[in-house]
Image (tube, rainbow, N blue to C red; front, top):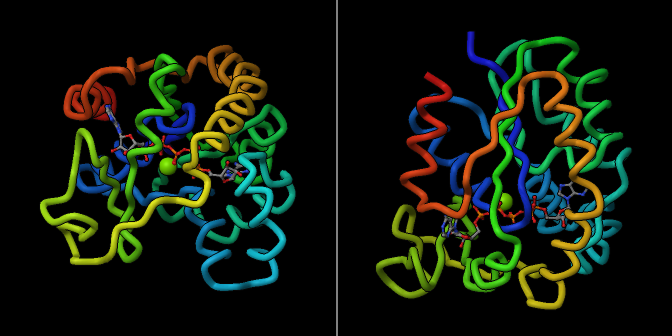
Amino acid sequence: MMKQLILLGAPGSGKGTQAAKIVEDFGYKHVSTGDLLRKEIASGSELGKRVKAIMDSGNLVDDVTVLELLKNNCNVHKNAYIFDGYPRNIDQAKELESKILKGVSQQVIYFDVDLEKLVERIVNRRSCKSCGEIYNVINNPSRIVDVCDRCGGQLLQRDDDKKSVVKNRIEVFKNTIFPVRDYYNRAGVLKIVDAGKGVAEIFTEISDLLK
Ligand code: AP5
Ligand code: MG
């Protein structure tokens, strides 16, 4: 049976990029709390209205809201999931275990990358409005400017991908992630990958781990 997969890493470390490739080759379902929250904002829901300013500032949405959203969007007894962007702090890690995973086998991958490199990556990111495909105007551009190669959808920049906000997101990450990494390290399920490498090389390393 496939293990539940948890991707930990800084903003722009490549979690979404690798998740898409893992889905394609290994048949996991992808659940990104950031994507779920952005969907709520796009739909104009009450929840979306409540979280928009928090996300636009680069701070974390409260644990209760995010856990509820996640619970409604995964069923680990039915599928193997890639948890992308959750957990982000130690309380979320404990809740993921006690309220969702409840002892099912899991593999955690930490995307280790020089935080200095990330602002550059993120400000050049574009994502497809329709299918979510991720591009980078410098190192992975679409064939036609602002048009998705995969589905022809429009490419957009995320509202929280402005330089000043990105810097705060990285600060928040630095202040919250290390107890999470230690928690999984102690549980013996943590694998660290060098996320400063190229996309293909990182994917080979992850594939070897999942085979
Ligand atoms: P979220 O959407 O999760 O954003 P994030 O964690 O900041 O991560 P990103 O999506 O920015 O980066 P990524 O690692 O997916 O990188 P990507 O593959 O796109 O969260 C957004 C917000 O939602 C949070 O700030 C918070 O407010 C809220 N939120 C979400 N989850 C929450 C939670 N659990 N609790 C509370 N609040 C929560 O790649 C980035 C760019 O780099 C792309 O252009 C890509 O093409 C390029 N790239 C990728 N890999 C490489 C590589 N190896 N080399 C060079 N370029 C690369
Ligand atoms: Mg992402």
